[in-house]
Image 1: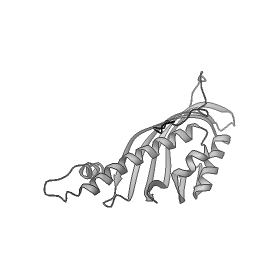
Image 2: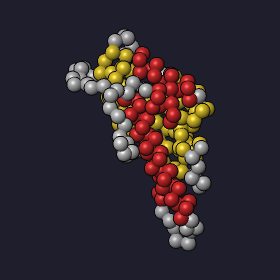
Image 3: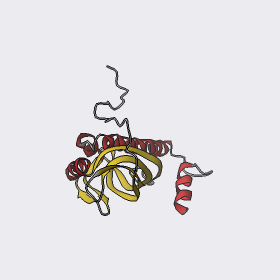
Length: 186
């Protein structure tokens, strides 16, 4: 729980502390940018690991790994490899990225983050047949600012639950055609 105490302390201005408004604002912006990065990752994942969405979320030399599944190094390898997983292993998904615990460093240029994953998916089983599956675990990540933008430098998925559902789900809709909401004016 020491990590939670450190996180909480990072969000509260202590009496007599350096009241650097610019740094405090950058830290708040960092928290929000990281939450947006995680949400965008979920959108890309639910679009069969769309490489055009997922690739730009990673730094050039980033690593994505999941024990027993794959280890990918480099933005292009991550985008291509995750897309391949969607074609070969997890053919449909609905990601819930839950409760991100974000710790931003003192300079507001680097961070670590853990968030929980709760996922409904259609996954290839050991018998090579696809089955609707409950999937859960958590992601650990390191992030930093690259040319003014927060990106993942390292992401590790730690799966804790994969349980095929006895009754197939009905009404699954692909997310391929849905636009990511934008505030830009048309």
